[in-house]
Image 1 (cartoon, one colour):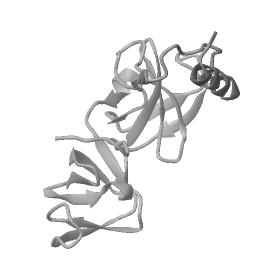
Image 2: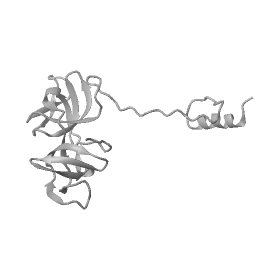
Image 3: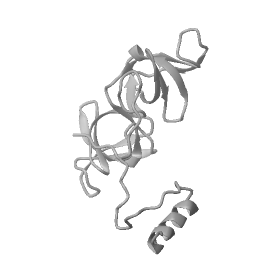
Image 4: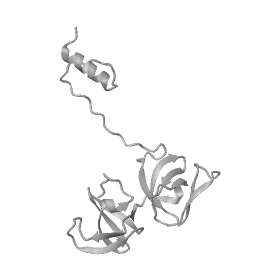
Length: 179
């Protein structure tokens, strides 16, 4: 005969669409399942991840081969792109606007670049709101990504290095930390 608590647990599991398995010991804690980030089948690197354009021009194709039609042409060296898939020597990428396709890996670089999204963004000497302003950066400017904490990223634009809020740039993960 099942204990009352076990029957309640059994009914609760059924109501959530879970497996119909009764627990004998109601004091057991459910096992925590770690969240695994997807990995690319070719490189074993995280998917999605950010890269940049190595070349000054790159074709984004409909599929992972030169025989596929060109859907998009990226025209700026160092443009940050997000890798969303891998197949042999090809990487499926997209830009800040979601445009993209399959590009040959030789056109891409692991050097991290970011794109300023706001019309005017303050570049600060330190990673806090009251820090001195070094420059105001316009929308569309590309910068090299140096480091990130929870809310701020350190970037380089030419010889100028400073800190910017993560939400003002594209090319870095929301929860990404970099030293």
